[in-house]
Length: 466
Image (tube, rainbow, N blue to C red; front, side):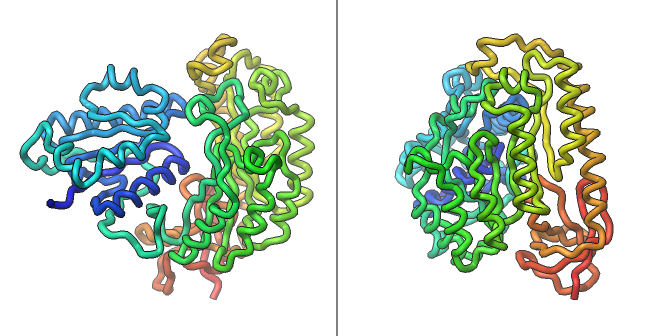
């Protein structure tokens, strides 16, 4: 039977990307050709891995589905399959509102989708409504995709569970799924369920396998990193996991994402100091600083505890880069509470910071118990003011790095620049280091010593130190 081609489209976060990579690896094992995040459709079946975290992300996923529906109606596509977080939470509603979609699967039942897409079933699934090959797609699919288009038709011998869609020198490693925290505003526990840690041995084996494939940099991710191990081992085991991971030969960088401030395992800071290949980088979402807002958010921490934690982190790991996420406009946020957040941001001087306006999520504690009483106009005004403050802080911190030399990984070339990152920048989220392509022999995926020569609000400019 002729090999079919599937277009896999991943929306949302890196955790979704890992799910798609596992799915695509299974496609390869079954002899199914695929394109990941294509600019234009190549096959007659499209699989969309959706995001359902906040309003903007849900809207992007729905818009992608509707774009594919249009191409299906125009004859460019035969079948649309939707999976992931949005489908997990709103499967019935989506099926009623978008009947052009042929199959819906949730976040955790895509093994059933794989059964449905076996080589024996694939032909009938693709040709049920059309006996002819689809037209070549004429509409661009560019959107908020997690990585650029890639095609694969054969399985690397060393890969058994993951197809790496990122540049081959770095990968995301998901160490747990789900979350037990139940913050008042957050729908993640509703979608993913309770926290489920992977076994330490399985994670270390995955990292070892990826090193054999040429991966040198590892982004460690979960909905909530610091809870890792409690469900399996009865205690937090993140420090032990990272300590053992850092000792695997060939691991050049380990970077930590999505920590939680309550019960933060301080011994993790000792691991950072112990190993040079554990990046002095910590992504820890704080959300707010006002005790009133933190209480309403059910964050189980206080302003003083947060300030003490930040002081401890900076004192134990000098020069650390802290990335955080803050929220404005949560239910009942007063002008005084927002000003408290603004003052905190000015004093904390986070190296990296993202922010968003509160968006009510049905089914959450906040949606069922609080009034969303901050107007959209006020939310936007507060968000703009907060980000303007952070932009100035970021510009000052970047300027302070001029004249310093950093170990830098080269990710890609764009026009007249090679684009790289230091240990203080994570892929696709933070600023980057731009290096003039002036004839110097620079190889993508290789580490260099780079002197910073200039900076703007978020990006750095540098030159290779010979």
